[in-house]
Image (cartoon, rainbow, N blue to C red; front, side, top):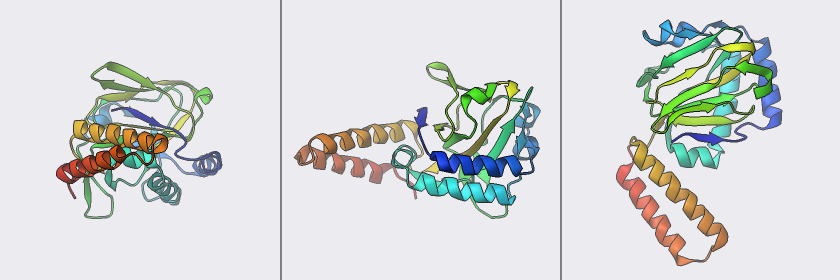
Length: 226
């Protein structure tokens, strides 16, 4: 499931984040790449322990915790501390797949990367190229979202960032370990959750809504790993 989530960060938060990112010190993006990815990765990145990355990471995690669409779609168990990258003219990231397990720097904790997320800080009109290309069962999907919007997609998918021809593309990227490992089960739960919410909005006293809510939680109880 590829899911655009609008307005994860509001306009004020985006403005604040952009100011911090403009003043930050960037390094070679290959510092977090695996062996295979390092051969195709050409961008810049904030050091994970930089004050800017930690400040903005906390902002993003707080916003995600309040975002009902993200919670319903990802069913997050653990979220990797957000990372930040910048692509400028000529830079790109060739086709790759994300590592299945990520170690959280400075800790003994690891997460299984069920889902990947890209949160955009640059407006689409500020750069040419730089599209996020994801290969799914329907073919190649091209994504370029407004600032403050985020894309959620399976970490198992092949994806790339096309070369920048002008301007700069700045974003945050991170991974989520879901309580529900299987993508098809997670998608089914999300579709059911959305249907229940619509039913509650239109027919709040309908006993079918209560019954379907019970079905949702029984499926979640069956499939969840904690």
